[in-house]
Image (cartoon, rainbow, N blue to C red; front, side, top):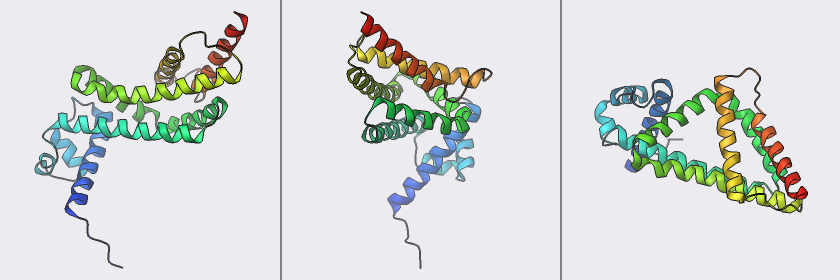
Length: 207
């Protein structure tokens, strides 16, 4: 059976996707500032002209990479919301996800850090990073509210602030896991979140 010929738009999207994937790999290896347009084009198997036929420059590519990652993360969060019905279920899913992510933690964390640094240096890119962070915090806030309500406990603080604490804790533990793996484990994030939740429930009941 003869394969269907790609339309012009489909072919262009395929080229852009390959350039974005090549850029993501190189940013993890060399950093955003240490990666050139020529290196991205070569890694993707295209010419410099093909790069500029799809992006005005490296900045536009980085912004598009941020936009697509933010959209994908939002879709993942939405899917997770539909799949879990309780805090315990979310913790089970989070535990599975952390174990799976541990296999590619170095590349994942390096790229995330590089894109965050780029956003810090380029204010116009910050909202794209921020949207992904907000989606994750919103999911955590919903889960915190549900778990405390199920235990008959009042939140010891604004649930949005509690969600921020949990998200920041995750970031810190993942960084420690990468930089100083001795004494850390793939499930530390989930264990720490559960410990905090038990502490908040106990604090609520004692007040």
